[in-house]
Length: 282
Image (tube, rainbow, N blue to C red; front, side, top):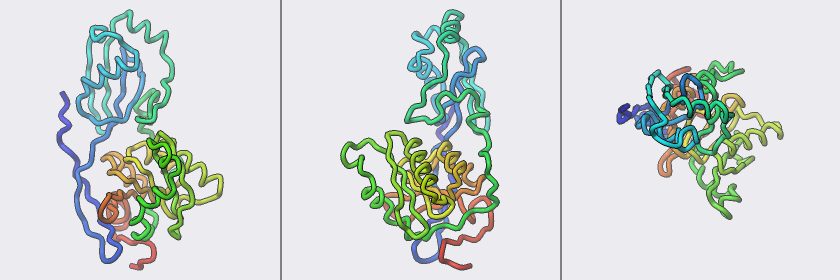
């Protein structure tokens, strides 16, 4: 059994509208890429928490139709790496033959975002076309303070049907320009990015905000599209913070109460150590 009880404390800055930012620490949920392999065949990669992996192996195998009975799974070997886990399972010969016949690219779901990826290297590949060498300047802290109200005003489908994620783009002047909704958080972000690109808005300025938690794949999507600042309404995962810092993406969490929390930006991990929001000179 893998022990995932330890949480990773990450430093962040509380961005008060007046006064200097305050350093603090927050435990973040762990996130790893989990590869499901059957008799050496790479089948799928899921972004997940690294606990109860034996249960995950059996449950995923059952619910995805790879096995129909527990005794068809003969053995399980777990290999741990820094940002990934390989679940190498051995099926009996009849079940393996059925898998080979029926195996196809798995359809994406609204929950994991990486279903059907055939290798860990693909899931954790470097972000292409990322030549950024420093963090962009942050928008003013006041632009984040009414973020939940912005979503409530912009989300039309949520008010009528519920069960919808959303992503919004707020420009450098603090104006909400676009809102896109979808049952899938990744889809909502894709739609928002598409709207901004089609209308010629540069995503390096202002900020993109999402209603969901922030995990690795949303960092990857943001970097591929040139987003300078990403804000989420739920805490980011530990891997999301590491990758945001690696690729110089400003990453913030706006809690229900209190100021925004800066997890990746100037003064946190990479780049110059001075914090400088828009409109504040050093």
